[in-house]
Length: 403
Image 1 (cartoon, rainbow, N blue to C red):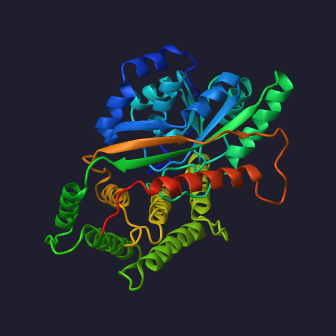
Image 2 (cartoon, rainbow, N blue to C red):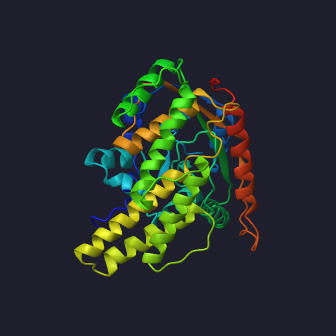
Image 3 (cartoon, rainbow, N blue to C red):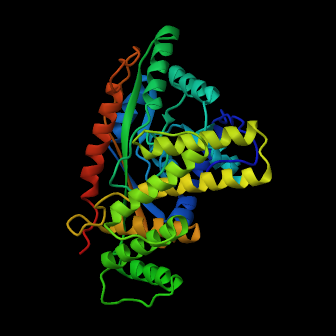
């Protein structure tokens, strides 16, 4: 569960010193962690020179990568190492509550908290201050949350460009100079053929469901079959029985049931078509009720279940339409889907497949000091989305196709 209900939110500021980031880079702590915990064993930085040019000019720099894996924030430590600069990063508050070591480490690497379940003026002010002063580059993931679909960009949060424009205004007033944003595409490629790993992991999950292995089926067929089975289990859990129909239709119907029944119980009907917006609203409502209304134990259990349902809806929407169609399926898509299913079943994915991270920088987008025009999408969001989508689509072709 990603909403912290054990204690109310408290802003966690970043560690401002340079000693810890320097030590972490010198002793390759990021490399060891990524290899052991995420299976990311190598990397390459592309077009790093455009980032270095922004650093040399003294610009306030906002780094805006796509966010498809938990490894992404640490992977961004590699270009920082090559550019010889520490960085700051905005991170969800729940990450500071995983363990004392994680909280200690991510603060020392420059992370500060953001409260996703409500307004967080301190986090916003901290980000604006960092960019206006050009203190260090700031990493913000414009998708907001990870999705484990490397080839699909999720909707971007408009708060990213609001923050960028506000910092550009402050920088212009205080000391002059520019604020720029660099779109960054992160793509994970499988180092070796995935067949032995994939067949083994699929057999583990099939055995968990009481199935016998089906050696006659391809990796793609077995993966789709398992996805259908896991969806069916969720349908039984929430709807009472599994449904018939196309996989994407069944997914959408279950998502709508999860969200609409939760919204009705919380008395917060929504007509917003975006699933993630509705999920964030549910999380915000649950957090507010938990900490302001002093609910009894029965209501607390219901609120916990509300968050679980919202989290499941967000998990389900991370299975894109046509992601495993035969014409487009690649080894990295298979690996992502298998690992996502393992997280759903066991809470943890197997990281035995070795990954190579490509971190590609795009040229800077100059941030204007003016406020965004009203009544239309911020042109900065449009440009950021278009650039990221183009880069991701191109990098997706570097994965191996799977029959």
